[in-house]
Length: 103
Image (cartoon, rainbow, N blue to C red):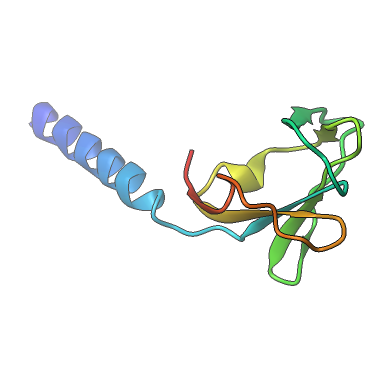
């Protein structure tokens, strides 16, 4: 009997992981300085980092000129979401950021 309970627990857990990832989070828009080239980084700093604010149905993350933004949490990035990137002047950045992502 214990084996059946254990197996049932594993199946429920597996189903939750499988279908839980299908839940869609809010879209994320990265805004970079005009003409920015190269990579950027989000660094976790729970005390001094910037809080990610949900406005207008999406998270907008503005990357500074140095390319490193300290944030309080990565929470919005942990679930499946759509993301896109723009320069500060509104020009879309054509790259691999557009699309669906799931950790």
